[in-house]
View 1 (cartoon, rainbow, N blue to C red):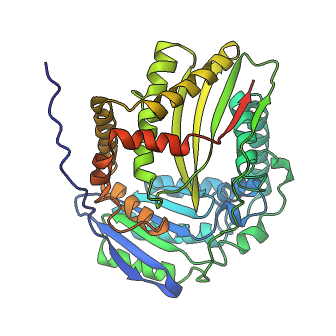
View 2: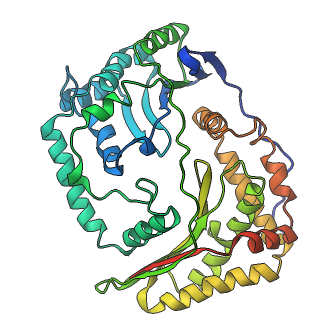
View 3: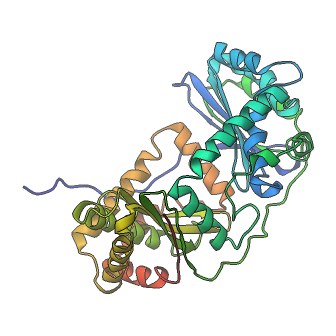
Length: 411
């Protein structure tokens, strides 16, 4: 029986957003649907972990902002959101910080005073801070015993040349002191872009504009002091009590603006980026050398990190590393067959399509275009560029980039 025909002749056309200028270069992006009963409001700030002194500050600041203001306790904040069917989250990435409110459209106006209060008037209550601290200290004690934690810690330190933020993992939680100056130099200083998706009225938009006028408006420049890529290193961290080993092989590469991003995406997916990949089939399924293995490229600001990660029995560690290298060597000399390559392309195209299923997915794509400074036709041309990658180009990409990498083994 022949496999069912899968059409690959399509392009992705994102529903356009409405863009409204705000103060000092910031913008309001809206994407409306009257078919929904909910909305998602995101405030994206131009500062992140790279603007802080330590990673640990980035762990506590967003969490404690939700646990007490000048007018409400943590319980009252949670109760208010629950009564309105809302959910609020604050996340700090390396370059940007997002404040995200999910809510019911009929209560849109009732959420905003609480949101403003949380952003501008957090009190960082000592009792809640101590509870968070004790939880973090207990968690890090558990994490430090894991080979995956140790491997990731040393890998980041090597590829980012011991950078105080990029080259670290958060673990010194008892060294975090007063967060009020940090809040004042971030949330009380800089303006943000707004992204509103879902069902909302013209009156809601007016309320949102009024809400925005209460926020700070200063500009912030993007952090661009990234360390230069380091020399490849091979490092083994013995953990005598562990019965397994964690392996990370990789290096810094590029982000989604790079001309080789799409060919690399295809080649790396075939190599180790999905369940049917070479690494999964040959090392996990056939040889049984690993509990789990994958290869990925994670864009991060001006560049990205390519890494192969595997969890293996300690006794099989060397065999697993040799097997990974063998799979690289095979693809450096022998092109994949057409069917295998087309399967990878179909998988990637399925992911792309599923990533535009909802209005919220589409807004995420518009955010990526803006903040990653991608060309406006990045998504509409993605299918064409994926289909254009041939067997010879896979071999070329593997030879070009699968070399001069760092290897870290913990366990």
